[in-house]
Length: 481
Image 1 (spheres, rainbow, N blue to C red):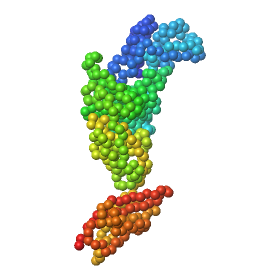
Image 2 (image 1 turned 180 degrees about the vertical axis):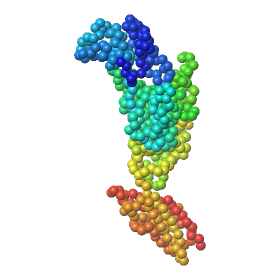
Image 3 (image 1 turned 180 degrees about the horizontal axis):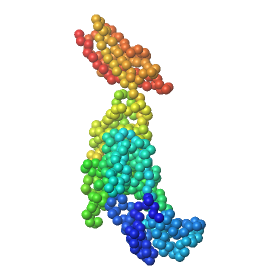
């Protein structure tokens, strides 16, 4: 009886001599089976390499038979013959309780595991795994929060799309805008719990927060056409760009090697060696070239005025210019770990603006980008978005030398006071008028002599026991002689 979720299943029909040969020669039989598992190791569906001699212990319970053990844990129930030979069991239908059986890892079943959508923003679509021969491929459909995905499903994000997946082991994979990934392998080995996760990054970027491996055979890999990045528990990013692949490590160590497709046809001795990239380091690998050597990431930049309430029409962040930075990345999320992203911008200048951000409490993450295109270490700040635009104008009163200043705050229904400051200087020093606690929305100022004038409206609001001050831009007009 075959498990429908098992992979690399070898039946008697598929390998007619295997079980009998294995019964006669266990070592040779296991080597053949392991070789079958590793056939096509360069493909996206290759399994972790397993030592053909490696075994896992199983303690028998009352009533166990060798056939039931094989049916429960192996890819094919017919493997009981191999178990009998390996464990020197002469009576497979009568196993004493408490007996330790050795089960070859190469024969253990690998069950498909799910991934779930835990955060979503913008346009994100998914396509179910490939259809059977002769059937039309499944269409891309919009993703919804809570959707369960499986092995070989693909996910695409649009220009404003973000998605974060949670894997069965508690790891998170966050997908940046304009990206395309395939969940190539999501498997757990029976009995041992060894987990195997492979993400194919075909375009764009993924940020990964991988739980620490519990078993020596656990694997988490991100593959691109150029590189394979493998870890056993860390936080790292992989960005597939048009000219190179960037790997940036925030915690732990990542092994970065050349992908099988990039080395296809090259003799084993001529393949470029892998690189170990540690925390605070990055690797830039040219497409088709050798894996880039580890290099230090730029330190995290500093946000200017981090305590500012974002009250304008646009949300704007200014970064203190950083040494050696060729650009900056500024991201907004609903959580401090940036699993629930809503905005993402790469800019050359040390600032970025974002539109249509609703009121609320958010987190902004800023980082520098170096000349090789590697993104540096990040810094995260909390900020409050509370829109309150101030509009204002000034006009001459007909038939007089008076001017009427008029203003309005976009946030209404709140206890509000206004302040008008009028000066002859752009920095508003030595004000001619500094009127405070104004409850109305206009004020007339008389007998102004000719010259240049600068003025500003300030809104002061009290809401939910908090004080908010919003200063409009400094405006200017000239009163002719």
